[in-house]
Length: 85
Length: 85
Length: 147
Length: 147
Image 1 (cartoon, chains in turn red, brown, green, purple):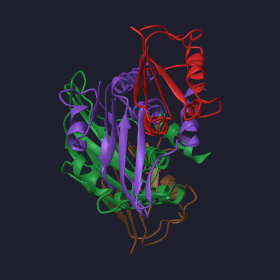
Image 2 (tube, helix red, strand yellow):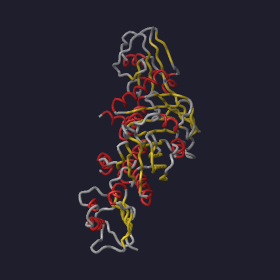
Image 3 (cartoon, helix red, strand yellow):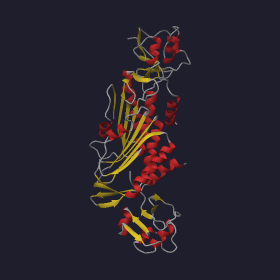
Image 4 (tube, chains in turn blue, yellow, red, green):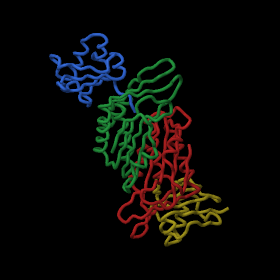
């Protein structure tokens, strides 16, 4: 299982990473906000996920709130505000 | 010169008249409202132009108000509220 | 900017393309297509108009829209004559840099056209023919723009 | 009701006709077509998306529109990949019995799509490439529907 994490657009380029797989949920991570904090703690360039940066999160292909639960087996995506249309 | 008067749609059918030409301006007729009153005074079926009936008036192909002036040489049209589109 | 009153049908694809053809400043095209609706006993619709006034009224409506919004092109086509259920009656296409102006102007033009352009619809049904009554809701739609 | 995400262009005439084909209850079709705008030094636009989420997001937006208005058909097409100035990016077509619902639903879908569907634009210019920033005005447009 584990957690699949995707990055898109400018955020993908900044992080130099399109996709990664965590073997399981990191300790203390249970929702979108805590996963974001955990990733940000890796330091540069992951501070692109710091609080105050405009980042949207989708959990299982649905836009998430900070409190949206994340559990083993989920797909979580981080991306900038969308600009389609 | 004279005044050309046109009637459209349901009003044309009620009056049995699509177009008529007045040789000149009838006495006392100077605006759209007074022309309408003058026509209405012909009696049935011209009471279709009576006050209270939904009738629109255009003077020289532009929607008119009751007080829009009518003078010799003008084209005046009477018709029901429009229903295009 | 152009308006047409015609018996013939129109080509929505070609009209839409023409609104942005040969230019790169159009970001949004909004189109309205009005169609004849069928129904129990309905046979056909005949559209009468006041030819000397129609083009003038439509051009005035387009000019009002251009005065209110930054529009790059506008096309209005209104058919007249006898039309069957499912046939197209009217096309209003608006090209603008941004979608807000295009949506508003297209709806404005339709609201004005419905209440200010000299067209009248007569319905043929299996029980006879009758002129369609104007709808209060069309007057109400227009009033939104006059506030 | 259907949504597509595709590299290929779409045919506005055919898509519009399909929204009322074979039925007589459609009185109004409102279409939106979004186009790539050119400009000083602008070369091309590349659209990236999140494939697993895109169709789901667009279907959710269409479902929300159908819950709010009486719609007879809806079609959404969004292109991805590299597009040149003047090329079509997006099509939203809405068929309804009456024009009010069709206009509102089409604008609603565009406002949601602009802020909730996972597409991102990267502009190539003669000075290099950059990701397009989201616009506050798009968020503001969306908020109108949430009052």
